[in-house]
Length: 519
Image 1 (cartoon, rainbow, N blue to C red):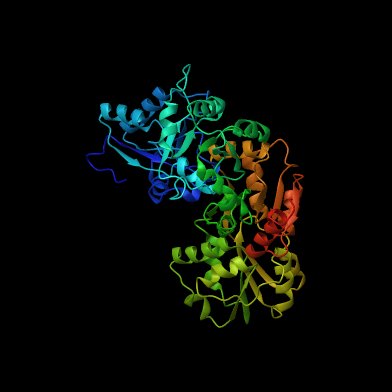
Image 2 (cartoon, rainbow, N blue to C red; image 1 turned 90 degrees about the vertical axis):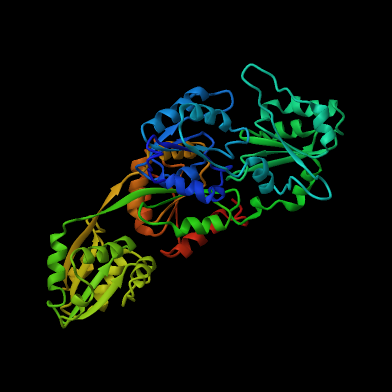
């Protein structure tokens, strides 16, 4: 997205975001989400995909639902031209593929007239992906040698104008997009044109996403079956012999966490291994960066502590209480023009403690193996383990957040240890406004099965961002008792992992929400 002379006027990328599952986002679309100056997006962009948009990114919502067009298409076209003429790199993010009934051609026409440079980024279309997630191959050598994508949605005030006899003669798979409200008309049109009413058919709701549903029947019975199941938009209709294969080939909902949706809160700077592991088990995962760590800089207290480290006692400890703290410690060490050699050559026996396995892993990436990791991953357990392990008269240097847990220091002080508590960073609470609103809506609709919390800070960040009137309906899966105590303040329904680790968090979620959990 380099700004060349030719592109000084700005440029528009018209990109498909796929049908909802964020893992179906193309690599190019994902890169453009990071690089664009402004993102113009639709209502059908899933919350999971929206959670990939960086915090400070400028966004413009132009959502449209069937029969409800808060931003007319003509205005969307003008927005794209206006933003590009400001010299911005504009990403127009549309559900599915922009050229498969996405009105992408109309948006390009105005860009061409205005002389705005553009590129097209195809997306995975729901016409193929949604049937695939329902176990329906749109083509199969034994059943259908072609498939045809048809709009079931008419222009406002008009009527769907289709050549039903021609569609019947095709003898291929018919995929109707945006046709739920016209289902009866479409199915009657096919039977009146000569299609056997016993031809297999299906309606697929919310395809590729959590809570996707499929109803399979025949052309003659699908409308009744759909109404009985209460199918709602977004949904597509598939007609053809291949629909009968879904009873054998269904797979998406069969995964351990298939059909489930979780909200994973995390620090903005860290990627979430928990989110990826839940996705691998079939869940849809919205990642919500609820907190951000900001280093204290300049950090006079850290400089002073490091300059004299190793000179206070025969044994000195460096203590880390989070992966972020471990990373920031070494970043600030570099900023101060120091490295580990300067801390290890002053005579003291240097030992290292970590609050848990995640912090130990962060230290391991720096070539350090902690001497102490408590069996229970909490500040209180760390303090007690240190008090028992450290030699009498040892110096304890704690590198952590400015407002760290109050449970760490009392055991150390009670043991008579010399403690220097150094604030490395501040914890700030923030979440992109567009994600706040969507998450609040999903929570109110009961479409998020649980929210995961890995620290008390993420609880505070979540509640500060989402600002629900009532948190009592939220199921919270917490990494430890201290985190659970913070969630309990808001009346959440709490479950605590058996250990303070990602493995235990995943295990608890599978126990509660997996296919054999009975939930």
